Image 1 (cartoon, rainbow, N blue to C red):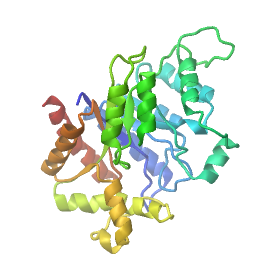
Image 2: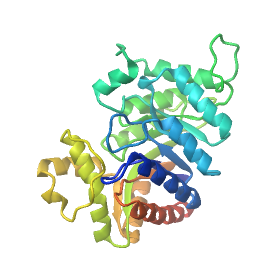
Image 3: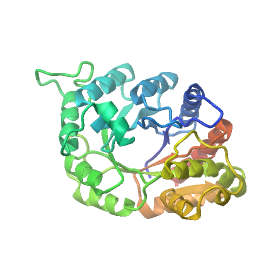
Image 4: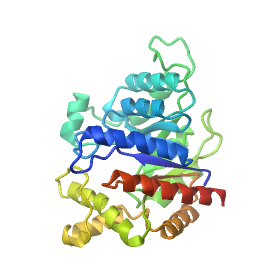
Length: 330
């Protein structure tokens, strides 16, 4: 593992507002910078009562302004929701304001329900234009070729582009284009091993990257004891269960016995989906993350976790940062 990073969704806990969530995100970004995290990424979601990162580029700019050197980016922008030119202008502007610090991760899913996707796009195009849209976007951020349409700001900024995915599709595309690849194993771990193999074995060197560079994501919830960590973790598990049951909402308060609140079949699905994770006291989390790194050999590990209490969340990522510094050095 060469680097470790942090993914935040700007979660809105029950009993608080979106404004509180955004304030908490800025506080977390500051901690991430102090603790040695390499990147701080935010993800695009829409029409989600518990997530405040819908205007992802706007929030990235605010995080970059409030920090000094940590890389800040999107993990990711859901490209089917946007015209490539608009994304190039947004991230070209960010790179112009914060040179050398901006990342652009691109996803193929809409990041929302289909009704909201229609509201975002105004039309539902037939066919898969994602590969062409990625290449169009790369063109806008590349060297000035005198094309009739240019991203200003954007042209010549060469903002690093990542392909995100939870299946083999993104792995194949990232390999073919010679781009770095990030797998969403924090909520969809099933194809992680195969996707990494496909990406690494099929990688074609490019002007962007000489050799494959793969990131995996993992959940983390660290506390002074295993028992406390699992109680804190219950908030994210409840939120995921509510989403599966078709009733998304704000991040629930933690509970002592999650099995009393979630039907057994749904809880089994949640445990599986969130299985690429490490929860517990520092030594437990250390062992869990070490095992994941040893098994999958990521070039970079990105951790994430939604905790209801902002102070406990800061403490969790502080503990995780110390562990990851140790693992990186080792």
